[in-house]
Image (cartoon, rainbow, N blue to C red; front, side):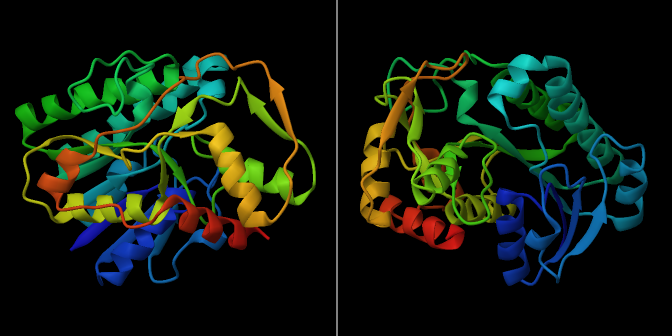
Length: 303
């Protein structure tokens, strides 16, 4: 089985690659290393430095005859999407359509797309299921939602099978400060440096924090599942407030954490947790890592 992972040198992508290699599949990674790191790369995977917007993408697909594509490469920063909507569109929409076209023209069987809880915006009821109204409050969330509309059309018109995985807030080893889950990495660095932890808003806002190993396992499950094409929430179904998160991190680090509250940021949602029952029943996937355990692993990887 030949699998391409876009963004495979990144935080989430590299963990996916590791699990694919554990299955002894033939894995190729493309990454422009704008946020990914060579040190994240699994040595058993073939690495090609390449941007998903490159004109060389189609040539690579034709040479490699991939069976599956796991598409992780993206612009993941909500604030940057609001400051630079054109760039966000270029990477997340036009870049992804470049990948979809390469899949169509070379007979790829299925694409697994990294979507986001950001497509929902501020939810009325939590946990959110896949049938909930989508109303993104950032261009990042909107760009993910736009691709979710492309996928069924590519399936209807060209037979390209797909699964769109709506990630909750991902954290774990190799995480940088960027992206939706980067707050955990930021907090750990601030705590270790004995600096005040800065919280945007009142700290009552909640997120569904999910360990990166569980996210990687969901991608592997989506590759092998015979379930119908569709959208799948990948989260823990649990709300954790930022204030609660700080309390847990204080216990893990053994430090008294000083908190500094800052004005809420534009585009940030207040409550979020994802109903993952569809992924459990149709993909045969389950979360395995409790929050305290995952945070402890993340902390130990950074100190």
